[in-house]
Each structure stands twice: as structure tokens, then as C-alpha cells.
Amino acid sequence: MERTCIRCGKPYEGRSDKKFCCDDCRTDYHNQVRRERDRGFRTVNRILASNWKILKAQLREGRTRLSVAELAGQNFNFEVYTNTRSLLPGLRTYWCYNCAYRISRSGTVRIWEGGCRNNAYL
Ligand SMILES: [Zn+2]
Image (cartoon, rainbow, N blue to C red; front, side):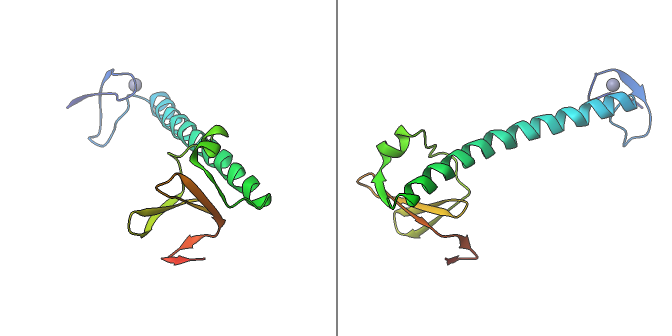
């Protein structure tokens, strides 16, 4: 049965479990998949690292409450976090690694250090 290579689109003959016309196409394909994956990891990791530094800097200064606007002004990215739980009705807790924060309806962000593991909040 004739198939087409998923890398270059060239037709080839071969075993039914083969996906590529040649080893070069197989290698190129897997390298490209890895590059795209790494790019995605790096983007998210960069945002998490930046968010963590912002939260940590606040805690270091003893600031545990600030406004959403203040955090946003420091380029805090509210879209990316490592974990989230709804511990209280209508009040969601977010984690950036070991820094937790909760945003009240009035727009106050409360920050504290503490992990989240197996439903136990440290
Ligand atoms: Zn090919």
C-alpha cells in the first residue's frame, strides 16, 4: 500500500507502522516537534518565573495585600499559574509554585507563601 510521508509528503512503500519516507525525515520531524515543545515550555516557564519573582519581592517587603492594578503594573500575568483551587465559595486561590494568592471581589490580592499538596494547604 502506498502512503505519504508525514514530514515531506512524498509517497513511499513500506510497513503499515512506518510514517516517514526516510530516516532524515523521521529525524527532522522529531526535532521539529521537540523544538515546538521546548518553545512552549520556555514561554510558560518565563511567565511563571516572572510572576514568582514579583510575588516573592512583595512578600520579602512584608506586603501581603495589594491591588490587582499594582500587580498588573508590574506585568504580573494573571493568566498563568501552577495550580488553582476554589477553597471558599466564589473565592479562588491560585499558586505560582509555593506562592499563593487570592483575589477578592474588590480587587485586593492577598499573597502568602504556602504550597498546595493533596488537598492540604501548607
Ligand atoms: Zn519524507
